[in-house]
Image 1 (cartoon, rainbow, N blue to C red):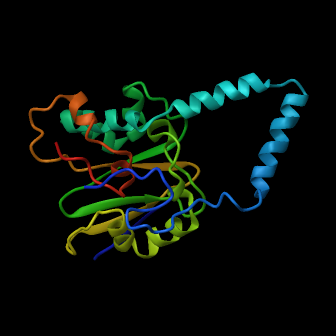
Image 2: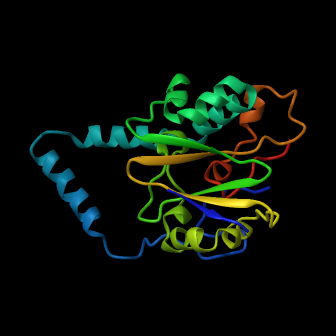
Length: 218
């Protein structure tokens, strides 16, 4: 659900924002109810021979192989092909499948950054995230602090990620759910008119597709 706020970034795989803000994952806390439930169900399935540890490992490896490069390819195609961009903004799931990326039954929505609007993605309840296109979510995305502050004070959060927007830029915060995920279509950098689709994809960062970053400049 989007929230409006009137009012050259890098990816951050570690638990801190560029300013050192403590977006640390809560890894030192006891297992949650759902984590304990997952372990119990997994062990029961193995015990009943419904699935083997090797099959679980193989599936985890498939999931881990998902990469922001998938989303970057989608963004680069949208930058290069106006007709594809129109299809992406109308139905991001169908457009992604058109490129061979299976996002499953999720309702995927693409939101476009413009000169007047900047989009920021969050999941206020947990860590819902378009993993098939962006891979595993970064640790900071899952922290309580990011999940709450992104909605309350998105402009301040963006500054901590190195994105200092003009006051005239409207910030729209989109809250992902279990059934609905978002991907940001970042603004295409200037001076890229002659770049190939593969070269454009290299400019697209994971953070830019979350909204906590901008596309790299060539």
